[in-house]
Image 1: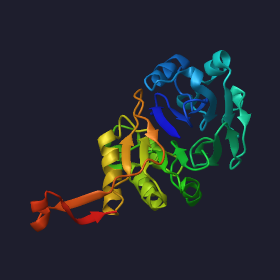
Image 2: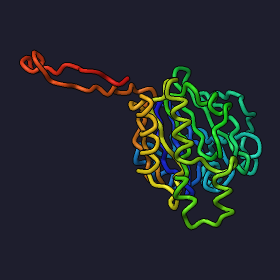
Image 3: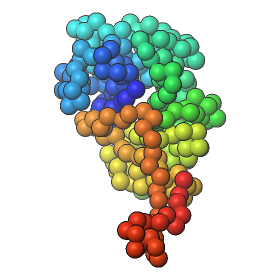
Image 4: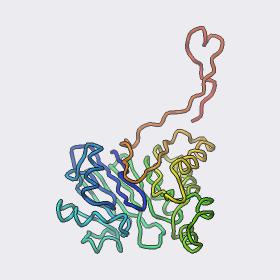
Length: 279
C-alpha cells in the first residue's frame, strides 16, 4: 500500500492511496478541479483513470470542488459519512462501518469540527493508514482509530504563537483554536507522540495555514517532540498546496539513528564500533 498527499490546504485537499498499481486507487477528498487532479496524479505516473472511489471526509469546497466533474465524466463511486456527501449523491456509510474497496478496506470515524467531519482509517489487511485533516482536538476515540497506523496524515494548521499575534480577527482566532476548530502544531505533535509506540513510521502534516504556519515550523515542532521522546526515526514531512508528496510506502522500515565513535581496534580494522544507539 502506498499514498501521496496530492495537495493540502484551504485551496484544496486530496490524497491518493493505492494497493498495487494494477487496480483502481482511492481518492480521499477531491477539493480541486478534475483537470487539476489529473495533472497532480500525472506527476506520480497515474491519472484520473486510476481513481475508482472518492471518499469524502468533509463537505466544504476545499474537499469537494472536483467531485461532480469526477462523477459526471469518470463515473467514480463516491462514499461519505452522514452529513457530508448527500449533495453529491454519495453512498452514505455509517461511522465505524468497514467498506471493502478492492484490496483496501476503509472506515470513517468522527472528529470534532465546526461542520460534520470525519477521519479515515484505510487498511490492506496488513498495514493501515489514518487521515484526519480538519479537527479541533485529538480525543481518546480519535487516537484509538489512528493507533496502529504506520502512516498518518494529520492536520497541523497553525503555530499558536503565530495565530494569536497574527492578523486574524479575535473571533476568528478563537474559532480556529477552539475544540471545534483546527489543530495546532503542538497538538499534532503530541498526537503523533502518542501513536509512535504503536508502529507509526511516516507522519504527514497537513492543512497548514499560509498565514499562521510554515512547513519548517510544523515539521520542527513534531520532529523535536518525537526526538526528545526517543522516536526520532519517525519520518516527518509537510504536505503543501499543489505539490504532491513523494510516494509513501506504508510500513517501510525506519532507520535507527546509530551514533558511532571510532577508537582502538575499530580504527585499525577500518570498521566503526557503535558506542550507543537511539531506538
